[in-house]
Amino acid sequence: MTMGAGGLAEFADETLESNPARWSSKRASIDALLWLASTTSARILNIFDMACNLINARGEMLALVAPEIGLGPHNLILPSINNSGDSLIPFSRWMKLSSAVHVTDEELSVEALVVAFRDAQPWDSRVPWKAIRSRRNELLGKISCIAAFAKHYPMEGSLLDFVPQLVHGEAIKASENAQMHARLLAAAWKPASLLCLGIRNDDIALCREGAAGLAGMGVGSTPSGDDFVIGALYAMRILHSARRSSELASAMLAEMVSRTNRLSRIWLEAAAEGKAVEAWHDLLGELGNSSNLSIECSVGRILKVGHTSGADALAGFIAVLAAKA
Image (cartoon, rainbow, N blue to C red; front, side, top):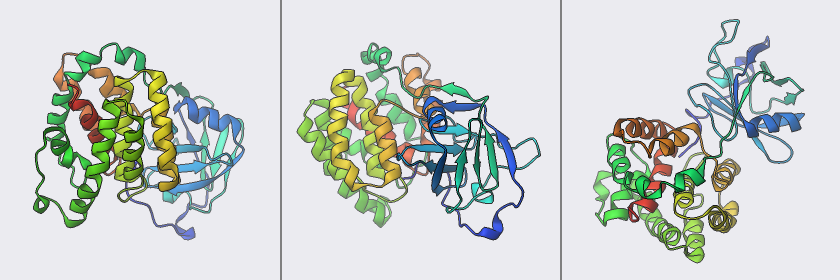
């Protein structure tokens, strides 16, 4: 339900370190480096234990993240420990929500945190969809394996719970879920079904209706319904051409932007452009290989994204593609 790691921290002025601590980033997405090159000041959007999201005047986001989070469309990775032996985590040690953000040609500073980014190596978050589509039939043959591997990881509260119902018509017993989760599953069932059907049948009206129904559904900084759509957008890139995928994605996002929060909109926009976090790159790259073990490892990395964000996105991916397999 959230794309960050850990819960939102409590912030108090007295918890901040008084002396600046310097860090040097060695890895960053291309979009993150472009953000730094075009931004001089920004504000903090939210702070998690292992990540901090910054937003500039144009509404563009940069995510400062711990190595455990990995690369993503907006991410600038900081080392866990700096040269002085300071620990990065939790981020609330170094800043608070009201902290000012300043950017120069070589450094970013937020309260007591100073980050040098000149030596950061650029990483492209765009998935090579053309190459992936060229192996479409082979990839579709792996979907059942992905669904099976996902069952090995206990992900309570995610939309993975209704994938068997979406794919095979198997009923879910409400008693197996907490009451709140059971309500989420019941509410998401119809729009998720419409979205999957719309993507598979190239029906833009159904895509719009399904996306509108899922937008903002659930709790967390990125709600479960939005995360499900992100996975569905990736599946759509496998089934349809780049041009048609972009058309359908634009129509879907038009229905969602006013129904969810800013952080979730930013992640949805990145997914609509075919961008993904490192764990999804790994999975999509492994689908053409014969080793099921490598696929299982990639599934495990996706399921570690956020609290249930990775699981919810994987649910959307599987649900769209399983009927085509």
